[in-house]
Image (cartoon, rainbow, N blue to C red; front, side, top):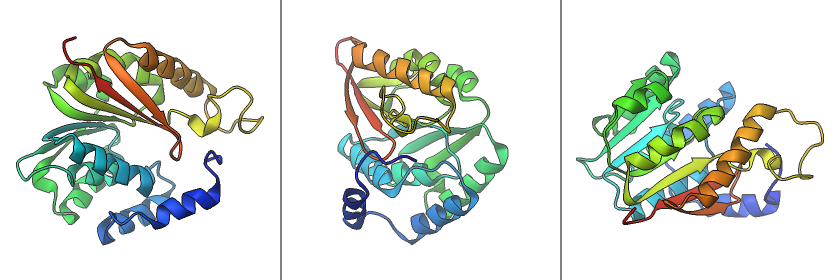
Length: 219
């Protein structure tokens, strides 16, 4: 990942994160060893804070991986709450279920295996919070459906909206190491959510960029 926020600032903010625990630290370490695309602990803490602030009882996540971000989200739920999380890779989904159990959250989580774009048609809302961290090429095609699944006042949180800084013309490495088509998909997605009349969106330059969109009431 390229440097968007100065490293010293990131270290300082990371040192202030008191919301992690031993299970999350172990999963984070496991993900780093395997080179998995997990969110950072600072993004995880933001997810926990936003879901808690929203009083979330139903959360939808696109892109489970091994359950790291899902644990941050599910930890904000009441005992009768639900995190519905979708993962295309069966092996990762299996590990995620084990990790949710390790975190004591298995009863609040339903891991669905398959293509999220197809499964979304079978999902019923409303959700209080939706976290989009799946296939970047599907960010745009999924948007209308995700907004429809949100309750008024609910939040759509999107990861990787700065894409290593490469969405900004002239910023970042001259020779990209990341998928150019994915970068263009994110550029177009950012424009859409910034202009969508159903959404009120703020972009946060935390790690690889987070967009926080609130569904307007009465629309």
